[in-house]
Image (spheres, rainbow, N blue to C red):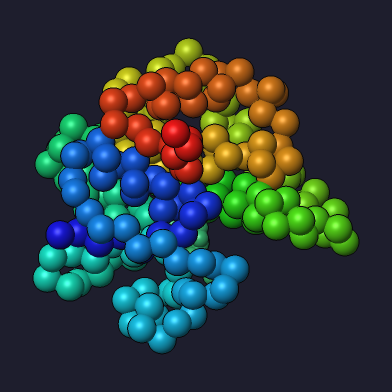
Length: 202
Ligand SMILES: N[C@@H](CCC(=O)N[C@@H](CS)C(=O)NCC(=O)O)C(=O)O
């Protein structure tokens, strides 16, 4: 059975859990505690060359690291990643954009907010916000008048970009500024098989 190493609040791991659910693939979930630095455990480091989650372990024991690589691996041959090479390149370009421009400026202030570590970091947060807002403006412009990121169909580009963008308010971003992003987030959440980051109790 597939095995996913994740952590409770990891948006990068969440992307993979959404796709696994949408594909109906059973998997074993192993949730690491990042506050306890469990990613530094020598046994885990053998699985993850970058000492980070998510890690997908295949039936034969091989592992895939990096959320984008895991999404592309799992989605091949499914409607979530079209076969046409040009369309695949469009999907891949969104995965790169998310990692280069969106993920870090959203994820780092979010972790500081969630762990109560913002005091003394105001200037750094401002710098991350400037970078993040610039990327969010580009995303907003692209989504204005469009339903999905690529070819007007839902793909792993949407899954990948959705995760941290939907969590940005937890990092102090004012998301009311981005109405098209807000509508697109609601559409992603409405996709069959979509799962919450943390399942509601009861
Ligand atoms: N580019 C990587 C980023 C992975 C990443 O930053 N993972 C974080 C959690 S979201 C992590 O494991 N950090 C290590 C730690 O905090 O110990 C991906 O997309 O998978």
